[in-house]
Image: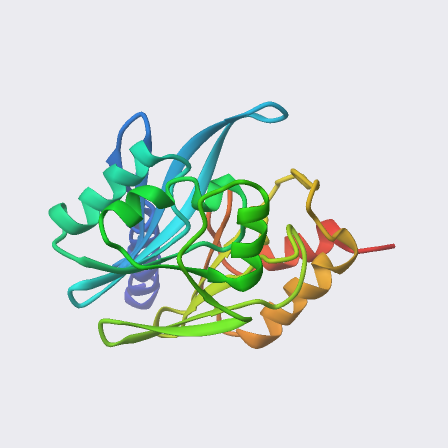
Length: 244
């Protein structure tokens, strides 16, 4: 009986921790921030689209010591201003860099606010090229297909694994957290195919399979839209775009 009670208490603690780790810790009409791990956060902002109505778009924030990295800006400058204030003023972390994972508005529409706050911005050369072609303000600095950033005492990897949602989509990986920011390349459970105007559907599943192979011990994955989860998101995305 004691052994059973012990296991039940561990199960209850695990469930409780899981609930706590998904809590919304900042909430306004323009920006929500969800705590996923001690130093990993999901920022959520909202854009109005013609085809899908009001859409919630995700980004990621990671803290290490007194520094932070941001993946994808919120969808406008107003929400970006809120996010920067929350990170730098409320949490006393210096934003070392913001990284755009592809050239769509849900990744970089708030980039000007980061530039106005003297925050370094990065994207792949292809993302910058496509953003300029599309008439958008691009990140300032570039890399070819992968780059490592030092944030506090942590190395953060960004890498292009192949085409999918767009030809330029990259992901961000934090090894000591076994956390992946998949962006719009990764679908949340139950999602449909979404916008395919710039997609390479024939290669999408293969690209996700490469990510799964590269990071076999992932614990947390944040998609571009919808709820975060574990490697089930990768499996779901592979299945969704698997060619018959």
